[in-house]
Length: 353
Image (cartoon, rainbow, N blue to C red; front, side, top):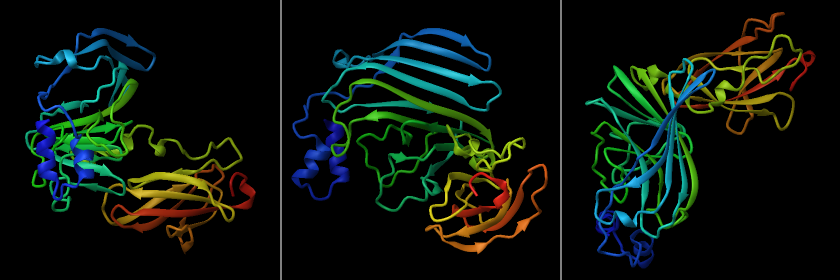
C-alpha cells in the first residue's frame, strides 16, 4: 500500500475519484508489506538435438524469506534455455502453470544484471531507436518502456541486447512498478523484462490466473547496437522469410533482399494494379545512399509515398541475367525513415507481376 500511495503522490496533480480508483486501487489493505519472491527448487536436465542443445529447469516454486510468503499465489515455473547450432544468441522460454489469481498488485519480472559498469542504453521502438537518458521529454515516464523488439546495453566495446518476444515492457535499474521519477537517468547495468503486472486499472486485467508462456532472446555483441546489427536477430524477423527466387523456378517469389541495414517490414500485392508493394525501415538512423538487390524479371521500381502512390522511378543498375540474379536500385534514405517501393515485373516472368 505504501508503494501505491507514493506513486499517486508523485504522479498525480488533481486527485479526482477516477484517478484514485484507477491508479490507487481504492480499499487496498494498508498493512501489507512489499514481498519479493523468486522461483526456486528446480529439477535440472539437459537435452541434445541435431541442431539444438537445451537446459531444462522444471517444477520451480515461488518462495520468499519475507513475512507473509504464505500468501503468495501458487504456480509452477519451468525455464528452458536453448542454444541452436552456431547461433550468436540464446533463447529462454518461461512457462508458468497453474497461476492462482490474487486481487493484490503483483508483477513478474526477469532481471538481467550485466557486467557493464558504464552501460549506455538504447530502446528499439516503433519508427526509432531512442536513448532513455536523453530522448524522453521533460515530465514524462522514465521508469517503464515498451520496446518493438529489443533493449540494448553497451559500453561501445561490448554489449548485450535483450529481446522480449511475447511482451514489450522493460525497465532498467529497478522494476519500475509504482514508480514515477521524471528526473531519473538509467545508471545501473540491469535490464528487467516484465512478463506481467497488475499495476494499471484501465484496459488491463486486474488479476492473472492460468497458464502462460513467455520467450526472451539474449544477443551478446561486439561494439554498440549498430555494430551488432541487433535488429537482424529479432525473433521471427521478416527479413529472413523472403529470399531471392529459386533459380530453378520460372516464377517470381517475393524477391526482396535488403542491403544497407534496411529492415523489411511488409510485402504484399499492389491493390490497384500489377506489382508488389514493399515497405522498409531504416534501422541505423543515419542518412545515406543505399542499394538494394531485387530478383526478377523486373520492369520498373518506383519510390512511393505512404499512400503507396508512385512519386519517383528509381534507376536500375544492371539488367536481369539468365541466372536470375536480379538487379540493383539505389536511393537516398533519411534517418529511421520508412520507405515504400512499388516493384513492377516484366510480363514474361510469371508470379505476381
